[in-house]
Image 1: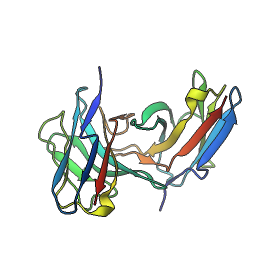
Image 2: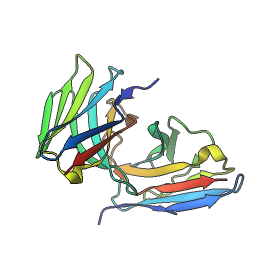
Image 3: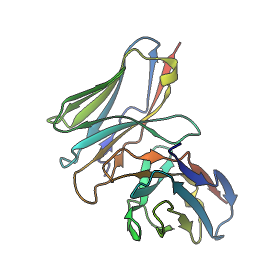
Image 4: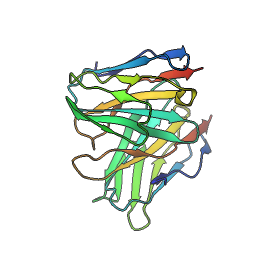
Amino acid sequence: DQQVKQNSPSLSVQEGRISILNCDYTNSMFDYFLWYKKYPAEGPTFLISISSIKDKNEDGRFTVFLNKSAKHLSLHIVPSQPGDSAVYFCAASATGANSKLTFGKGITLSVRP
Amino acid sequence: EAQVTQNPRYLITVTGKKLTVTCSQNMNHEYMSWYRQDPGLGLRQIYYSMNVEVTDKGDVPEGYKVSRKEKRNFPLILESPSPNQTSLYFCASSFISSQPQHFGDGTRLSIL
């Protein structure tokens, strides 16, 4: 049973436009959400996170929105740049002594020059 | 420089030949974890360790062992590798489990 779902395997956008990457989750205990970015031949790197007490977190060109009632979060990249082309993983965890990250399958973003 | 170092980066081996993938971090992190990445399946946790001498199974532990004798090292052991363990493996660490984790650059294992 997949608890974190990234239903679109890929997304292609034009440079300068907005990229919107979606993520859904099923476990209502999740209260902390993260986005990781991964380039080929490298490990994932942390991008941005959001706690369930917030509905928005912004860091430069990256904004994450959380809709708890819909169990949905999204990552907005504005403006998109060719260097943003990578695989993006959504991850979630629940507060607790042994909390662990549960990852989605990832989405490949291609930003066209 | 803060980093998680995995070795080897690439390995081709044969079924049944024991192997160890090493992982070392220099950030004094207490939490360490191993993941495997497979096409269409994303990142799945194999084992994790909350601290020295404390390890536990993740989502896909079958066929793997780990140990945590020192805080900085968390080796992944395949006692008798099989072809279904061909995958891309990542080690990660953080101060606590719920914090963003730092990942190594990965180890690509091919078991023939």
